Image (cartoon, rainbow, N blue to C red):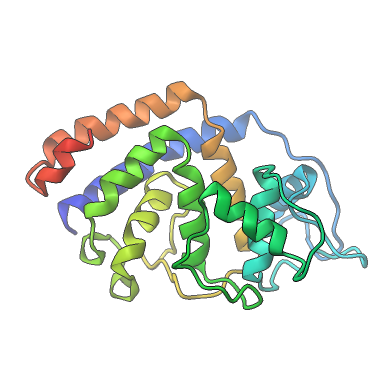
Length: 240
């Protein structure tokens, strides 16, 4: 594993403390879905997401956790979670949400314009990273990760990455929002289920809402670590 990979692992471990600290202070509202058993791996996150109002179940009382999520549906989830102002109605139905996402900076012209197809994990990571980077402290992280290439990443399937996505993947991994799979892969090109999407969204919201003091500690950790890795690239020295 490259030294930058070790840095990302360390950042991920540091961020776990942020997520746990925030999660301990958040109680999920009890929401019952007949297809979500009490021991479902994403039950608590699904319940909280529904209580926050950015995702809903179906009229028949199911949540359909294994179903895929379209790009339009995810943009709506993010817009609603962030309370982005948007126009109502219109054709297609998601146009107001897409326009709001562009205005907020979480969608860009280089992104796919096919909003009706299932969203890939990497597309979720890209949007979440941009949303997180609207917070200045995390924006600094994203800027510092611009020097990374796919070969720097500590994942077995890193050759599937596109270099333009590496900074986004690094940010969501380093902040603890996405941890990857037990086989050390990220499976970025796999489509995400409703359950997976909600879990990533809940992790994002927890990290984004973290106590500023915790973010400051994470920033200080980054500064200390980059002092050790300045031989990676002189550009890193400029972003501390």
